[in-house]
Image (tube, rainbow, N blue to C red; front, side):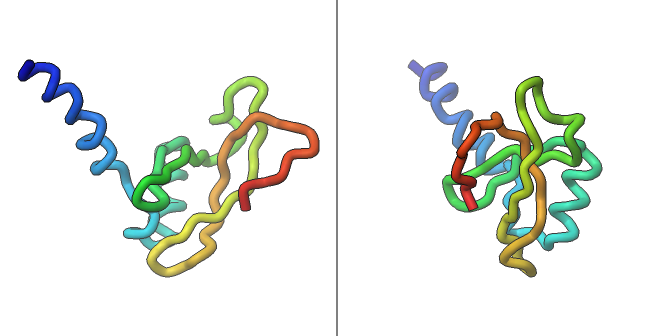
Length: 93
């Protein structure tokens, strides 16, 4: 029973350590992505996504999309992310 309760607590703990864009400047977010190449960032209390430095970090069948995240100094900080290409797709922006 103890092992079960510990394992159930890990996902929430791991999520709390995920860098959140709203606590960083735009330059910090862009620098982190550039340094790591690919990073999962929190973008709000319950939202997150994977952002990349360039197309080389996308999987086969994925394309690079421009996106914007809210940071503490910029409500539309430019970032890039990979996603499946879907013709006639309505972007999330």
